[in-house]
Image (cartoon, rainbow, N blue to C red; front, side, top):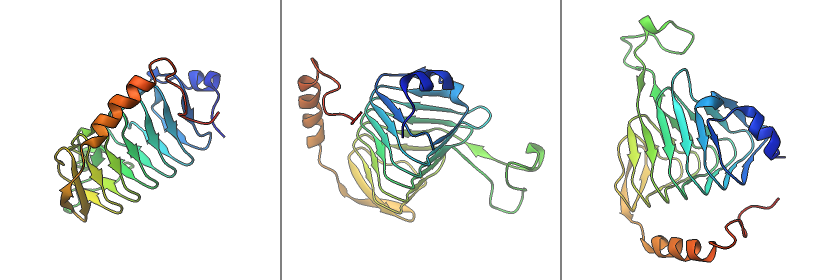
Length: 198
């Protein structure tokens, strides 16, 4: 079950677009630093958390499948037509695992060495189920991340990557840019046609 439009308006998002569906069993922390565009759907058991100072920005036509986590003290951006399959985790912050510092958010910051940074998924990016994206990563336009991948460095435009750590597999077709233009021209008069069931 999704929140009604009126219920969403009371959550206190920084920006809330039209035709937004968010599951009532999703968890949202730091709503005042979360911006949501038009035609966005966030499914069951997702967690959105901006930490103390981070931010999350969703463009238009975004889908976040069940059990995804999007969190951290850095900036996270998902551009138009991007999406996450189930159980994807995006972290804009990470502890220092070297052993030279303590870890976890219950420990005072003076004893930890948390790294935070931008995570940016550009237009038409799709991320396969169970993948993890770490801080300071930009995934180029039209790229696809294979299931169960660990993305710890930037991905070039229109590239398919997979693995742990993720490595380039092959180029991805750019035909979806043509399809986008057709989609836009066909939805000028009725932009909500066939997007989400109500």
